[in-house]
Image (cartoon, rainbow, N blue to C red; front, top):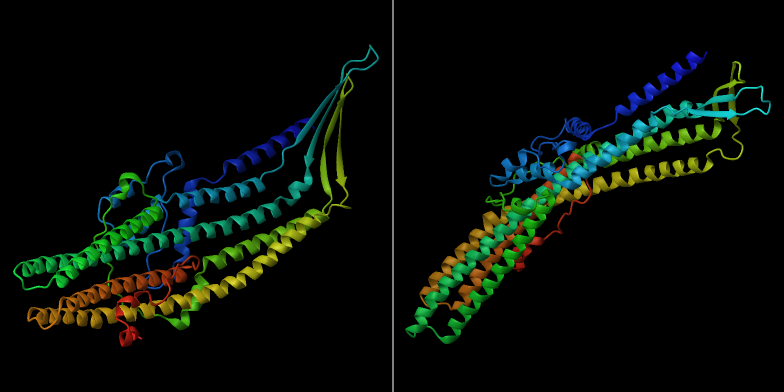
Length: 484
């Protein structure tokens, strides 16, 4: 019987040890998240960005950058390259991966058998003719073994929900990098326009100085030309600062610092695409793809399991049992025992109430999130359609008209039929129209990224710009309704 006792205990220890060795590692978590994203994006719409995947260094080399990163940084960046870099180098995303390991550790811990407790005591008899007596007892928590499947089930449901949350973080990281890259392209475009306007004003001022020198230009016109040059110089400086801020936001979204921030992004914002938005089926797709809803559903499942587990804890008497051996100096006497704790006062009422409340809160949050997903999808769709129409109107109608107006005004100025003020005003309107076109393109691409993000499963923190951002260069009046 003694041999059976120790062999049983050894078996339990081996099971516990093997369960502990099955703990999750960073590469396991990364693989799980990538597999989830791949499965989640199996039915994505054509033309949508490819489903992002994460690749991180091993836990032993966590301080190093992935080998793929320097190769990407060696070339001029584009939007997809910025997204890829963010998934490789963003430290907040890596932190989320480690947080996933916390939930995995809880699953492992919930599946471990409890340790046996051994009690040994020695007694010295009063009778000098009796030998030293010894007692040995082994106690085991039977209740914990019975409840172990319930605890593990709840922990596994929580891990599944945590995996969905981290997959959402991957999409959020990619979205922030994409939008930040669009911002850099737009600010670079505005700086180019301001610089070209400054160059035009400087050329005009040089010509004005020559005309003034020979007495063909009054002082007031020369002073006006000079003021226009100085104002344009300030606007260029402001545009340069705005571009630097945009670059830093992209560096932050990717996780770049030091020498890695010297990247280049030569491509301007592309023109708007011809979008075919499925307004009727969009909501259904967005709800089916929503990672937020999937995460809440997973946490509801975990909360439901915790309600059942706590109820079982409250109803099940605490059970423990073991074996007891006593040596009276001549022989061992072995027996067993069972201890039962009566569930009279503490029946886990508080834990049941907490779990039920958590389940109710999650149920309400699920409905609220579904409403928010629908609203954000409609907002993104409207913004894509509106910004796309306005951008095409700028490109096809307003900008050519402004360029034609400037050319005609310069001809009349050379013929001394208009003054310098009219030339400056026409030049200013052309520059502002170009900037407004760039801002509208930025609004379009941000809305397009937001729409793809909602359809990919994330609706939070989309950061849609308010409508009408690009109306500054429309010149007011009838032009302000262009594209509608």
